[in-house]
Image 1 (cartoon, rainbow, N blue to C red):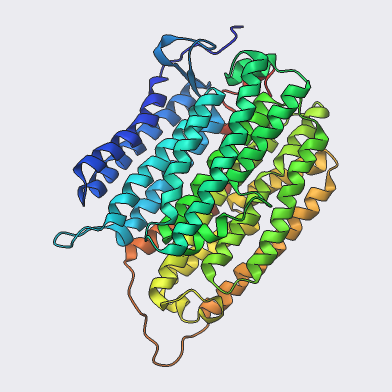
Image 2: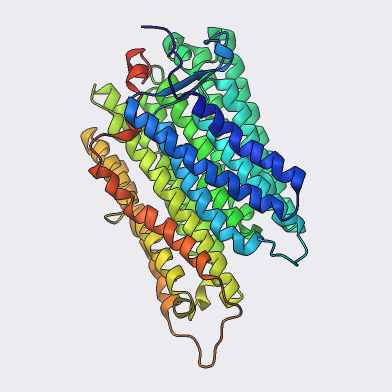
Length: 506
């Protein structure tokens, strides 16, 4: 078997998936003004067609898509590779980008005859930049290209926090930037150590050559710490709530649903596909313990928030924790020589269901603020009558976060629970159950207060367009109905991963 995968038909689609958003961003910047919105939507429409073509090619071929840049194979060249995990994430990002884009037409649209705003131009350019950066994260085949992708994602995400230019949002953006840059330094240090020890940064080749030695452990620890800072895993989450507090709803949806997923996906790549042979079960337990702390602390703090947006932000801190429970489960299944693919798929489903649900929640909070003139949790009465579609979407997204059937959150947690039982790691079962109960408490609290009748004579501060409510409901339905993927005849997330397993990369 060759050391690396050869180029495959359809591999060029991966290059287009990365370049298309950045080409649209540059074109929008050159044309400027309200044309940036038009360019963004033209790019998104082309992106939908492109993602459909990539997904179809993966399904038909039953193997990963590979493209060798310049025709040079690693270690001399750089490869782009998209297996089932990558393609699932790319399609999910496309869905969320479309939903956020529709919603943003109301907040960042520039109708004819209305003077254009700098924030509108900035938002549409950054939306495309986040999308393109994430695509590069998902298809990159080597550690350094992943570093470049993460930096692009950071510099696209940070300005989203301070679109309004206020002092407090600039301060929050600066805090985010410091965390992200420190994280990048730790990640890059680990990359230098790997290259010095093994002479390559290609993920597949590293998986073959890497050994259980001190330099590998130091590199793994350094890169993981750096990525945890970017993912906002407890206790490195301090930048996330302030970033959401003042950001526009569409920007918060991008940050929570998509931006933090890039660093998490890279942790999965490293721990499952590169360091699997040297990572010990106790170290995986430590990572999951941080996730469990995030679940418990994030949910408890969310319950104590006075503002709806901050409640959702701390809910994000908690939900991030679930994403890290998969690592000891995968390690435990591997140690028992059992199939660990369903635990990896469970983690992927958790990430996708969270992305769609949390984007819907943040946008719902934005509509509630517009309608009521505030987002105080204690005084949401009247929201249910004024925004029936929005509150329905909030409830459906909450069902997915809690993990009730038939939502994607239910299927993801069921797969993780099954893995925990199979490996006798019952303590993670208790953590997931406690997290579900705490999540249900604040979702129920918000819904009860929002459905209470408004005061006599109350009128909404403003009316929100129906298409914005429709976008929120559509994303919530995606999360709620995601559990239907269990009906698929194959595990799409595992397509193209048999080659890695055959090369000794798990």
